[in-house]
Image 1 (spheres, rainbow, N blue to C red):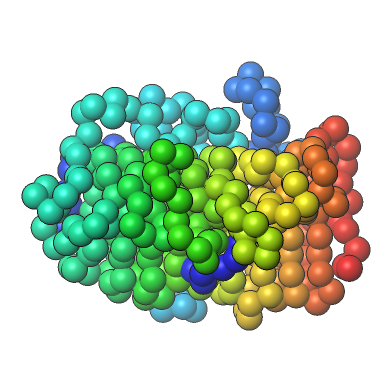
Image 2: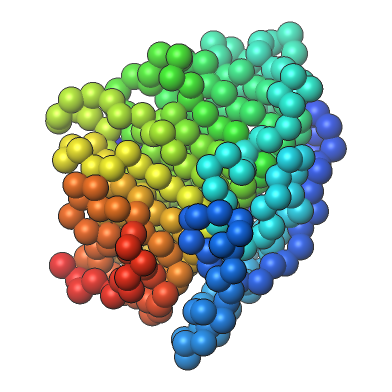
Length: 366
């Protein structure tokens, strides 16, 4: 949070750089899984969909193509892809730490670290890869630098490591609302060894107004994990952790695992989001939907949310939210698991549990 405002995905981009993609999309059932281990992944959709409201939730999650018709934008792929090298995570299952991101041999990746090995259609300067062409695919690369993508095409990233080296405010910046970032099976990080971004702090590791599809990524090291400012995006089976706590009040970070400013049809599915508790100053929420206009019909299903004053915050701009099958972590100094502000509306709240396993009832607006 604190905040630079920060989605869209579609056809595979041209301008490929690196190897061929290791994944193909395939639909999966709705599974809601507690963050324990693979042996305990036996929670199935029936645990939630036995409720009369369940068909509403399933429609919201899986009729993704229909969600995008009204926008006039390309429809994203409907489902998660097959596992990458070393991954055993099927679609619709909550990952554990270390089970997503780039999981292969980093020494086999093609390194990009300067102008001499930057891909065609880009410019590399002061630690930042700037796109010039509309479309760019990075597949099987280790980029030692940030990305600044301001085009109206598609930035596609597969099976890669994107590692900031400083000189920029974030790791991946996607500023054009007509653009798309489609990233999966990759690690996006601002290492502790790299000097921190300069204030004002608050950007997400993946940050901007472009339409986003972010699947099975490991995201860490920035004040926020993801910031998105236009809606029509999907975030699925990611691990967000070790966010940067910087500054002193009043100039300090307000950390969010994911922060959304405005826009409809945001899907937050089976993500493991872990903030470092709540120290009374820095951590805001694992998932934060702000007061922006038109945050309509967000879907928050099957996540593990931990840390912050509230682990889930729905502000006044949110309407018709679906919140199903989420497990909340220990309050750890915070106020409560969830907060719903006056004016926000929830159409389905079901199957959500506290750290002790108790049923979490829908909070009263306040």
